[in-house]
Length: 80
Length: 469
Image (cartoon, rainbow over all chains, first blue to last red; front, side, top):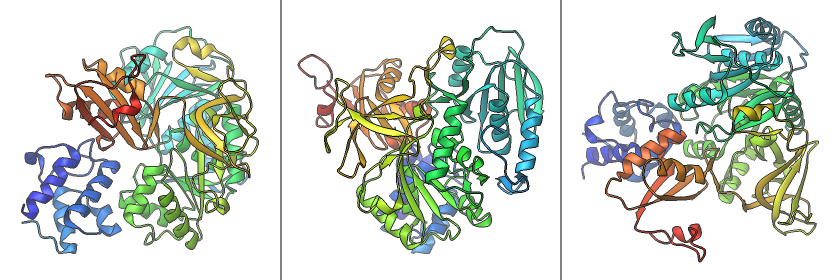
């Protein structure tokens, strides 16, 4: 799997959505599943998938599908 | 006001995000002004609000004026709300909307971002004279089962909490929980009754704004249910920079031993006092607490009864158990024990059914030092994100969708076993249940099975369910 596929899979698994919903409009609280509980689950899943430990700043600023790609760069994860 | 013996009128009572600061003088004024909206008679008021100034003012004013509020959250499902309106026929609805969606109500007043609607026709509804507040029993599930509370309940619990948490006018809490959840409300009531202050926000611990507000307004006290502590651990409890925080409390479910240990040792280093607590909405909020000094010696204990309360355990025949480490039903007595439940409009007339004694439905034991430990439950309930969810009601929701299920679960996990059916779409069912009970779908797991394991008497063997995957 490419890093993009892995990244998308985390979102699709955590929020039970299809891949075509993943774009710049997919943001925190845009669907009921992405609330604070869903956010915590997604972060945990991302940390496992990419074997990283995210900093508090990145967790609380991870406000959209697109912003997340930027945040992962801090851990040398490049989503192309 | 009923909950506060206003000491210093100039001291701050409420701070809302970045917009407004209310002193006790301002708050008292606003509560008085708001009470002019109400009739002289005792009426039912639906408060559909959030953690904001308007909601707190409406709540305080309603109780102060002898109305009976039912506290609900803005995000409540519309069908569930309509159902509650049909069952309880409120005289007033207070909600953050501009237009009037209610056929039988008139928009009578605007209050900042909220509207107050009043029913046109007079309904003859009898409310018990001591009834002061109705709380839902399980978060936002929309169940019509409500807990009937009196002013005495609210005042007594707020005073006990203020005493053991040593809340003073120097304390400042932040609304980390919904205002209509008994634990969230107890934080508000206990701080107002001690002359402390409250920062009002709807941001969660997963948002930068929440932590920013703590530091900006020098919040001293933080409350959380187990999943809030999971969040704090996820964010990195060691690295959390919250120097103004002096106390943290936990209730609303069980944290695992290793997490309690990690939290308590880290907080100790930061000079933050960590209180583990136990309670039920049926007792207004708090029943027992474990002081920070005991957390290492008594891990997993719910501690001892709050000031002016009493705990004991009874066996199945209702006899007192005096022996240590012997399990029985946990019973509590105190002035904070509610009058009982309401399931229909007629129940609002009922008097005190509990008479100050609450059978908690939880199984417990005590050790040689008199510290209590929860060992299980006599009821079919699970705690999910601080909400008490009835497993029977989950099965009922699913049967109404045409499927046969058996629900079980543990802390923050709801396990549902559904009999195979060609019409069954598990992802759909999961999101439907999530929407209906207001619980994030990550807590819900659905397993399709061909049949349920059964006991000799034909009843579902719930203990056997988890082995059949």
